[in-house]
Amino acid sequence: MADPARERPLSSPDRADDAARRADATSGLIIPPDLEATIVLVRHGESTFIEEGRFQGQAETPLSSLGQRQAQRAAERLAHPGVSPALPIPAGPPLEIVHSPLGRAAATAAAVATAMAADDAFGLHVPLRPDPGLLEIGQGEWEGLHRAEIESRWAEVLAMWRRRPLEAWAPGGESIPVVAARVRRSLEVLIGRLAAAAPVRETSSEPALARSPVAGYRGAPSDGPWSIVVGHDGVFKVLLLTLFDLPLERFWMWSFDLCGFTVIELRSGRAVLRAVNLTEHLAPLLDAVAQEATEERQRSGAL
Image 1 (cartoon, helix red, strand yellow):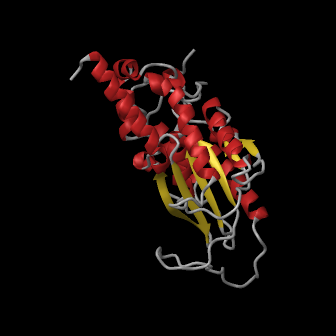
Image 2 (cartoon, helix red, strand yellow):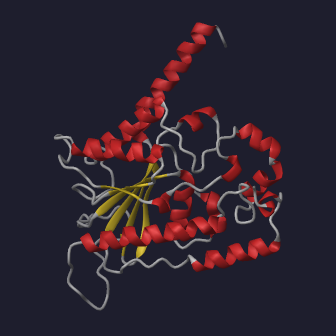
């Protein structure tokens, strides 16, 4: 039976206060000052629910035909990062591919691992590590429903979720502060594993700045480790807010395309946003989809 409190169209002040307290408890992620490392975020490919216009959350929904092709294009690009234009990531294979356990993310991650194991790529198996902390935000009663039905039945809640996401969320679903707590734990593990794999550097009283923080200046390329994280739009929004110590109220400031890449460098104890939502590798698919749509219109006689 659904919790009646979750079915209120607008959240009460006590729920907002509780959300704020939990948001404070998840701030201040610590990045080792001497760590140079890179995290590459990869959103999964299109799923059948996305294709059908349904809300997903933590529902299991496989990649669509297009989603499989997107995953393959992303995998090939990550397996050959030096191909022009080179991706802004370190040379050599990643430490690991961490992924949400949900099938659409796991399948995308597996495609990347397979491409990297090919002889013309890195030629080795990069470990896959599922992490339940990277599950998409639970959407409760909305999961599996078409967006039109949700807009009709929960218009006020949905509108509030889109305007003030700490005060309303899907009935029976997860609040953003709850998600932030699990994402923080996953980030701590991820950063800890990168730190353990990083080359030993000379100790000093001040952290060394190996490269200029201003883009465009030539300097020594990073020799630090890097990891790939394959996940979801909602959880990636929370992940970036956590990494950059931004208020959770800014949830909607980020956008992640299907199989797009976002690159974050860890330098001098802070996160640096190196690239956001790279999608050039998907251009051939977009051209193919447009061509298919044109051919369909010609067959149907539609204008």
